[in-house]
Image 1: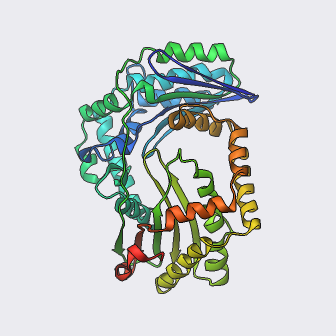
Image 2: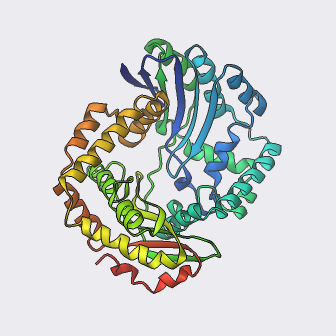
Image 3: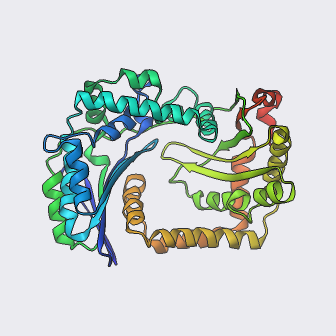
Length: 418
């Protein structure tokens, strides 16, 4: 196995990850997402991603789908806060077709007006579905409060008002203003020769000319409480503090901390809150690490009658972890991190994304040995130090949805961990 990269004259990075499989997983990752939007553009990065499949100068929407599916492949995309990705998977003999289609939708999308109207309705339905899903909505409210009045805090899907306002010219302007070649990576994982792959990609992508420099997003953490009273069978709750950025040296210790606290059935939250106390069905901790911000917290869904007790007991477990972590817990967290990483490398789809994000976040490829070594270097003391940094004088955010959600408002949010 070998992985190499090349930077074209226009700034686009090409990655060739040679592994012995019969398929090729190929994608274009762009270092721009919803956090690049202005207030009146909320949701436009996501709509642009949808519209990329709705027609180009060379193919209509049906042809894009049909050409891939005629050879047994699949194509998809996603939008996150800081990255937009367009990717497909085909048999290795159809890789050139895949590259051609990806370059076509990146360079030649026409955003037909009739397709904009159709997709507008689809996305507004998606927004409605998100509102009707409380365990999605509680996270959206959390992020809105943690990054108040900032692009990072706004919903990726947008709002009905903003989505209804987008025109063809708005989509073209956002693309021209944010899809800079210097923050675009074409990544392939599969069995294609180095020279052949680089030559094909260079032919298809080297004519993208744009003198834009990637925008640096700055996000400020804000503390607070948000409650949404709704007549539900369950109360949904998310609690969190400011975490780390995805390039922070302590990011591996944070992942270990999250696993020990609430990462699986053996974790403290699962054992104490669900197994011993029977206060919930679902509870877990999480980390979100971006170039410009980070979050560390936990989620739970519980009976409205048990919600206050659950929060109190969960915070107690978080406080306990500041002063005691066993060697056994650390070894288990390391084993989960290593196995998850290694198993991910067995999928060429995961590999192509992993290497693309390496280049976007770090400007270099990070090998498996380096990651494993960083995991092995996690110590109990490194997690204690991290806890001190994150939890001492923390400014927490609490988001609650359910019956009497605003009863949590009386909590002293700023002193909740002390």
